[in-house]
Length: 100
Image (cartoon, rainbow, N blue to C red; front, side):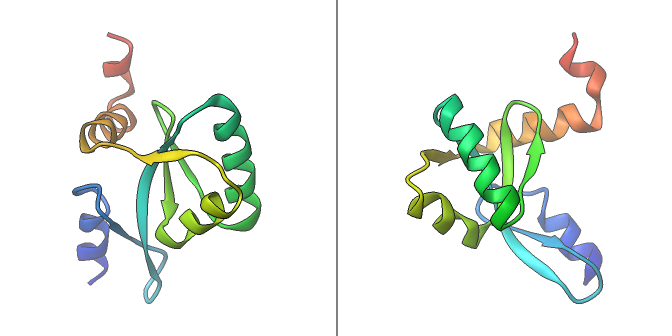
């Protein structure tokens, strides 16, 4: 099951499962903040009250239930497109590709 969870985390953008050990998994989503101010505030709120992962291109991976934190604090964001997520993951896997 662990391999299946890891496999699902790299698929389509709606939603993902990420494994945190043998018996722990959560659904996540990739987002982009709409403004620099939203990005700063959103990163702080999520880092202190939930979880947030950062990818190249200002794409962030957050737990599905963390969207409520952003909504409650009126921080603007949108779901990252599948293309944006794929590009971000490609840059993590091959950092030299982003330089070319």
